[in-house]
Image 1 (cartoon, rainbow, N blue to C red):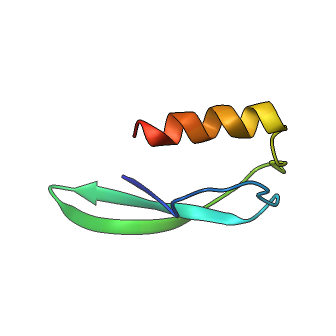
Image 2: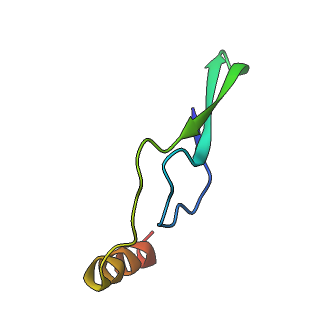
Length: 59
């Protein structure tokens, strides 16, 4: 199971911790591993941000 640090909002630096991977067997957590961003995520353009905002309204 992947547990994200929501909301993920750009910019996200390369190497930033963005969540935790939980390895489970029969509903028991047997391991927890950090999840890191593999690359830099920059802020979107105006139209990209507008589209993301519209999409978030419907979630």
